[in-house]
Amino acid sequence: MRTTKHSYLHVVLASAAVVVLTLAATPLFAGVSKYAGIYSSESPDSDAPTAPAGPAFSVSLGADGTATVTQDPGKGAVTAFGHWTDAGSQVTVQFDAVDGKPTDPPMVFSPSHDGLQAVTWNHALWGKTTPPVLKKEVSNWHNKGKHR
Image (cartoon, rainbow, N blue to C red; front, top):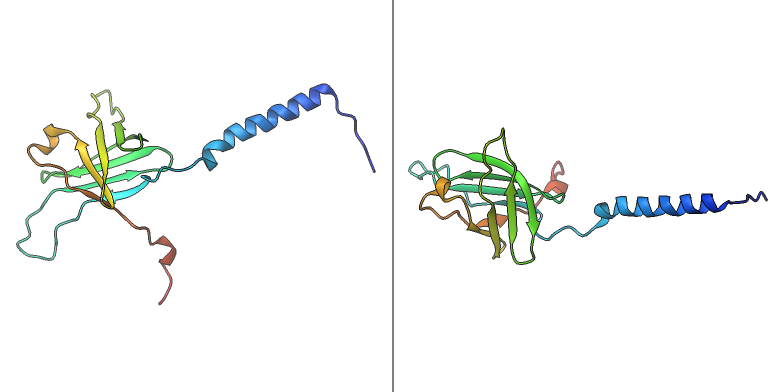
């Protein structure tokens, strides 16, 4: 059996490496907010010949804190990117600046039955229309490609 002597420096460096690796790995194993996921509004029935184009809305809240918000109040879709935070009873999306232009005001969502409801939004974009309730989409990725 081979034994080695460890100097005080080796012990300190090894301990420091363990601490650094633990801190670096923490975000990978930290709990993900229950709000992370994809939310979308009910889209109007596109097969109905007289169905009016209604407002459409989708929000993707990444487990890494990134957010993608696509809004169409009936005048054409607008997509914005940003970051979100979970305050427990509300989710806030802060939008990223684009090409030096002022950022859109933040959006705030409150939990609703199976989804989120916007409580603060860009009224200049939506006008008098209230953004629709968003329902959390259920992933079915594990069944794709499988035959029944």
